Length: 311
Image (cartoon, rainbow, N blue to C red; front, side, top):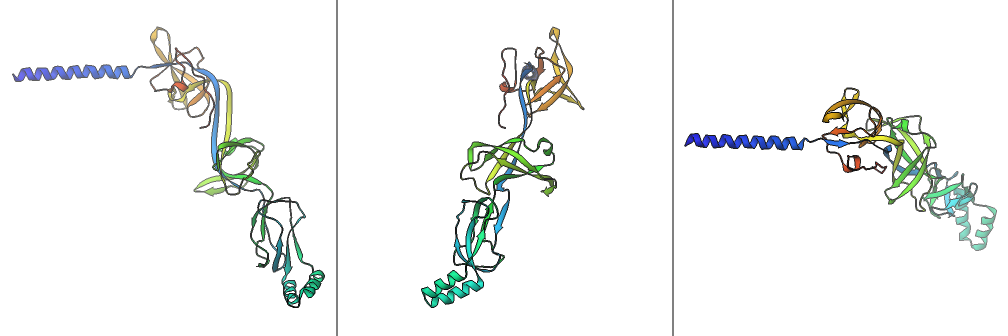
C-alpha cells in the first residue's frame, strides 16, 4: 500500500514539473519587433520662480514725512515720473506749526517751502507700496518697490547647462495656470556657479513672451527644455537593447528561425525609445523577451508611430 502511495506522489510531482516547464517555456516566448521611423526628443525640466529682472527699492534721500503716494501696485510708470511727494523733517515741523496758526499761514508756508518729489528711476511698474501718506520715514526706509519686467529665474544643474544657449526657446508652465503653456526665451546664463544641496548649479533667466495679465512675482514655474530633437530616424524600444560593456546589441532574427546578436550604434534616447544609427534597417526583425508597450513597438501585424509628448 505504501509503495502505491509513493508511486502516485512521484507521478504527481513529475506531471507538475512538466506543466511548470511548459508554462515557463510559454512565458519565455519572444516578441518580434521591427524598427520604425519617427521623431524623438530629449527633454528635461527645471523648477523656477517668477521674479523681477531688476528689482529696485525706492528710498527717500532725506528723512521726513510722506505727503502723498501717487501710484498703486501693478501700475506702470515712466522714467522721470513723480511717484510720491514727501516733506523733509524741517518742512514737516514748520508746516505743523503753521497749521495751528490757521489756514492762511499754512498755505503761505506750503507755497514758500515746496515738498520734495520722489522720481521713478526707470520705466517699469510698481510691485510693492510700503508707505502711506502721513508716515515718517528715514533714509533707510523703503517707500516703493519697482521692477522693469518679470522673468523666470531657475537654478540649472551643471550637467544640463550644455543643452542651453542664449536666445533658445523654452516652454513655461505655471502652477497658478496648470492648463496653460507659455513661451519663453533664454536671456541670461550665469557665469558664476552656486552650490545648492551639494549640487553645482547656474542661474538661468527666462524672458516670458505671452504672460497673463495677473502674472505675479513669487509664482512657481516649470521650465521645459528640448535638449535635442531628431526627425524621421530609426527607433527601437530601449528595453530590447543588450549591453556588453560599451557595446550595444539586439537579437536579430535570421533565416531558418534562428537568431544572432547584431551590434548596433545608437543616438539619443528619451528613456522609452532610442535612436538607431547603424546596424539594423526597417526590414529587420528583432527578437525580444521584454514586455514592450504597444505604443513603442512594431510587430509583423501592425505598427505604431512614435510621437513626441510631455513627460
